[in-house]
Length: 169
Image 1 (cartoon, rainbow, N blue to C red):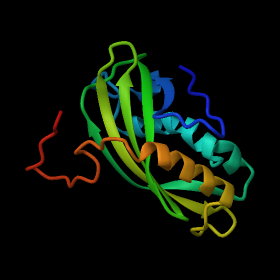
Image 2 (cartoon, rainbow, N blue to C red):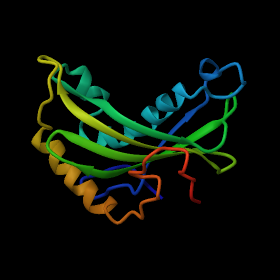
Image 3 (cartoon, rainbow, N blue to C red):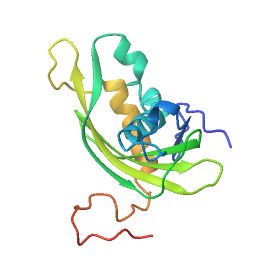
Image 4 (cartoon, helix red, strand yellow):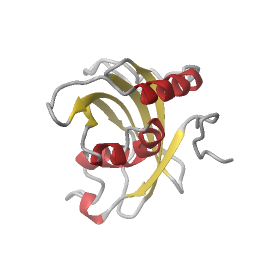
């Protein structure tokens, strides 16, 4: 299957790949919680590149997307060198925000290691204030959302956190 984005094609989901790097390990001998965000960040690049808001966009110096909210559920540990596969789906968007859901899998063993929900804000790098997403990116977001809107959302999305909450399979 070819998941290379084109104007007519929207991957469902977008796939990204990485591996557990030695610097991501903690004293427990597994991937430190802080580096799950790094892995999810790696995994979101294909979608943000397709939208036109990836690192090339940021390096152009006008604007970027900043993560402003996150929720991560850690399901199974990951050890040094583990190959990772991340999936990304667009949950929603408006003129300034992008809401995504991601899953992180051990690529060889196939298990779900973590899942995450993130909200990103479009920010002007000149004023450092919130700014509108460019029209071309808004158009691509609409195309992606039209495909991803049918995704069966897991109970994790939008959940509250507390001692009464139990993960659902």
